[in-house]
Amino acid sequence: MEDELIKIWQSSPQAEQIKFEKSRLMLDMESSLNRIHRGWKYMVIRETLAGVIVIPVFAYTAYTHPFTLTRIGSVLIILAVLYILFRLLSIDRQKPNNYAETYLDYLYRAREVLGIQKKSLDNVLYWYVLPTYPGLIVFLLGFVHIPEKINIILLGFSTTIAMTIGVYFLNKRAAKKQFTPRLRKIDELIQTMEE
Image (cartoon, rainbow, N blue to C red; front, top):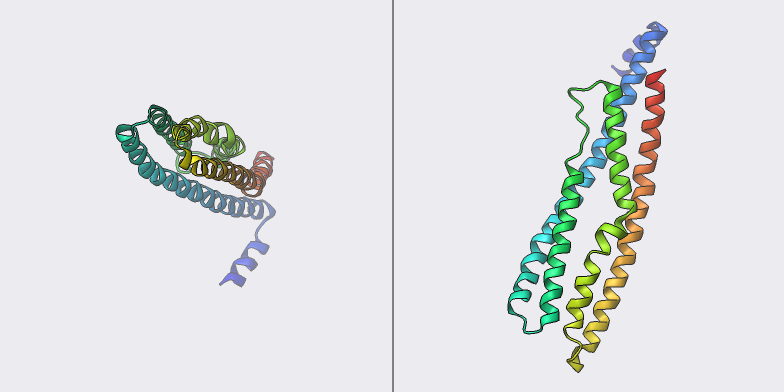
């Protein structure tokens, strides 16, 4: 079957071959973009589940803990998690619609959405990591006056810094390895379609 299709394609006029090539390129691009969007969706689900766990835990801590700094830190952490979830969900809503648009419009929209997602991964330090730091620091400082808790505080700071470094480099790597090549390919495809 595949050999017959290749023969038909080779025997068709040049204009038809170009149309077929463009369609194949679009299908490949759409498949690639679907993988990216699926990965983004899973990330949003993971972060939402983490938020569903973190928010009640820190709400309980804010309500029951006797130390004021720990209560304030808990509220700040809850606010940071809500901000992160809001940010991720607002980015997740922006997807190219491949039904009502031409190929070219779809590619422009896909490039815009991928650019937004890549930028958010590149700037993860500012909207994901830094909003949580004030709450974590204030939360841990609530235990400073207890000498037995100093080791826990130091462990908490060390773990937070290690996780920050990991999150930063994993997101930078994802932006470079997954989004940059696809954005380049979209630009090439747009150029091909415009010719």
